[in-house]
Image 1 (cartoon, rainbow, N blue to C red):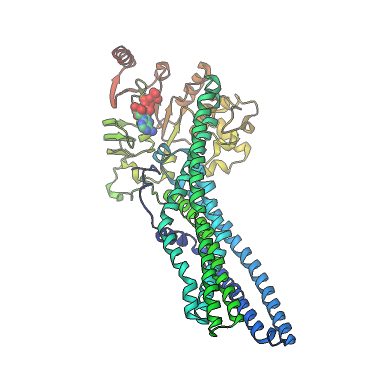
Image 2 (spheres, helix red, strand yellow):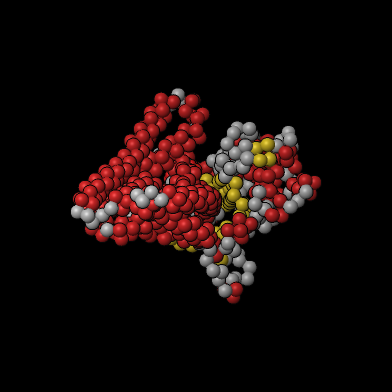
Length: 588
Ligand SMILES: Nc1ncnc2c1ncn2[C@@H]1O[C@H](COP(=O)(O)OP(=O)(O)OP(=O)(O)O)[C@@H](O)[C@H]1O
């Protein structure tokens, strides 16, 4: 399956479809959104009523010099303004909460989705870009909801109300004053897709910049050792320049709305003034009505101008949401199949794991394994040897179901490996990688991780379990034992020590199948012998698959497979495997 986030970028999502999806995501906030909408209506009503009262006061009390009436209406206006202040504060509070909760659940949803996706997804996408989506893009959506949405709805209400007042005070004058708004509507409709594209490009380049930073931070040692600082600086410079250009482009696109909107608002004022004065001269209009009218024109075009800025924010939020929803829309293709009917299961499967005519290709890659048949029996030790790039790790990855074969089937204990849940599978299969990943925390945290039973043990109980598994000697290699601090990124412990921790972690779980991928490559020969002894002490039925370049580490293997150019053949003896390796080297 293609998991590349950018190869789907061509897929166009309509704003309405994107908005629907987003609102669906916000289902829990519906109540708050409706409440906020109600408050906004009250607020807009107050804003709309004020100019009318103003005009009324002028025509009925100012011009007739009835100052008590002026005072009463002024007090009424003051009361309305105070209610407006309170409701505005309330709606800001309400929507601020909605925005932050959205940010919280969006980030959780994206991060949760990343935990579900298979290895292939991470092979095809850069970590920096994913981080940018989780951090920056979700915040863009939040900003729109917490800051802009209220103003957005508020502006639309006021505009609608002002439009109705304008048309009802004087239809002709009202229609003339609304004319420029129609032009704006067409203008916005035409340029919005372009603005959204500009924003998407800007976010993509922010993701690129973040990837560049992440790559150079991860590889800082190589950069310093090979004096590649200039090279990375240049790459960063290019990414930064690209980001600058696209951000500038997006900024220009977003800022295009405002001047055009302002221009149209000014034209509308001019039209009203000229036409209004003409109507007054003809005796069809009063000065008070003209003042109210101008105030409503302002009430109509002011929010429209604000809408211009908000529309830009909306385009940014929609482009960000597109990027987020693209991750959310992925479904892992490593699904758990329904378990076969019990009757179909063999009584006691003779093999623990079997490859049946398995072929595999990485997404966008050539075929790496061709029609492999393998049969791993319980309690035996298998070695995979072969030249670099031959396909050993890929074979092991298929055994642990990091990927599914493109053809053929992998059977675990007689059942399709896809019918096991991830929990069942990881309880049966242990995997020790060449460069094991450890979490920030203590050594104890790292070995009990993800295993509820081990996590519940007290310190003494855990030490007893470790001793029972014959692993105490390994623990003694760490000065502070279980309390040794481990940092995921730093170098507080050596690679060999990391492998020891990974070894303890895997062996303690007593898997039925233990895969060691170059797991002892960084360990001294004395410790390696220790590990070898521990492996021998594993329960008799444990199957071991060892990938090793150093042939002395596989002396005790029951069967040796030679993996080369996508073919896996039984090498027979160690001598023969050695011969095949030497022959292969000479050939190449
Ligand atoms: N994630 C990936 N995406 C695309 N191709 C890959 C990926 N991982 C490995 N390959 C390719 O698959 C082939 C087999 O690689 P694999 O890692 O299985 O070899 P290996 O025998 O384990 O090598 P080594 O001894 O160096 O670890 C290589 O040609 C490699 O380039």
